Amino acid sequence: MGTPTKEIMMLAYLAAASLAATQPIVHEDKVEHQGTSYQVSYRPHVTTSLRTIGMSAGSRPSTQQCRWTATIALDREIHSATGERLAKRLPGAERVIEGYQPGHCEQARRTVETQIAARIESERGAVLAMAQADRSHVLADIDAAHALALN
Amino acid sequence: MAPARTGLLAAAILLAEGAACAQGAFGPQLGIELTSDQRRRGLSWSDGRPTAEASIGLPVGEGLQIGAGVTALRGSARHGGADAALDLSAHYARDIGTLRFSGGGTGHVFLGASGLSYAEIDGRISHSLGPAQLSIGASYAPPQHAIGGDNLYLHAGLDVGLPGTPLSLSGRIGRSSGSVDDPARSRRLRPDGRYWDHVIGLDYLAGPFALGLRYSATTIGPVDTALPYMDRHHGARLAGVVRVRF
Image (cartoon, rainbow over all chains, first blue to last red; front, top):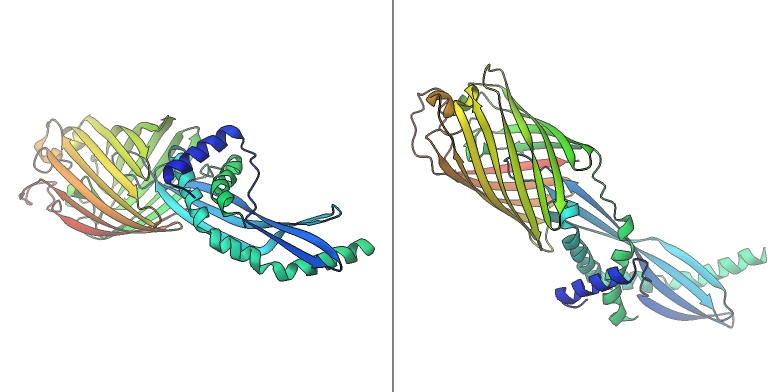
């Protein structure tokens, strides 16, 4: 990810462009199996949750914090040269990260979004490792799909 | 791998999921806090001793929340030897741009001591600026026999979440003043007339748990503890806090 300023600009641009932005491919691979070539791609799937904890009322110092969590899962798609497609969310491959921001979540939302984006970016290596570790399962899943189709 | 796109689109993922980024704060909030000395506006409410507080906050509408908290007072002389304080509050908050306005009222009911309960109204404006939140506010307790007059408390504070860490730093300064109808009872909130206080805190956050330290001090000088409602616990103090909130 670029500088914070660039990040904010990207956020603003993407928010204006479309909330349904295509998720990125973080890793691509090619496998050969029984004479057929398959293209394998991995995209992260991120779910976030925000929760305001603590109180901010009266004259006592606020204990209010916006607690956020982001769960990064990995979606895998296998495409054959003949147009067949096999999609799957990798089981057990998840990264959960969390953070805090003083104040109510609604008020701090923009800052929290920037924080989450930066933390997700810092997880890039771990997400890539999850994708690379999946290579051994790809052939097994292609075999399983063929077996199911034949039955 | 397409590193150039990954950075850009990490943000896109977030925003694409934005609609599902639920606030998740519509249920009741329960809290328990243990502290080595509960200080409010620099004054101990627990006779300078460890105490516990339990609280609940209940959203009852858009921006409207009612709350209740009970604190063991350890027979604090400040509050006539009361066993516990029950704080009942109702507050409304609204966001306008990056500002959050809140206002409401709190009733302080003292259990185990008669005629000492009082009420106050308050307002606060806070502003988020990056990882920091600035706030200013005022609380006013109209003239009441329980506090020997009225009381105005003005305060300003700063809370900063240290980026990339579970640490949160806070600081606040306040000034308490008011008119006096009954010098004895006015000592409850202003032991020696108007004064300034400040508090600096550091919290370590872990899920619903928080561990913290608070350093507080006031400008109140030496006092005669033989006087009614006079409590000597108002000087510089470092207190530890353990808090859990659900």
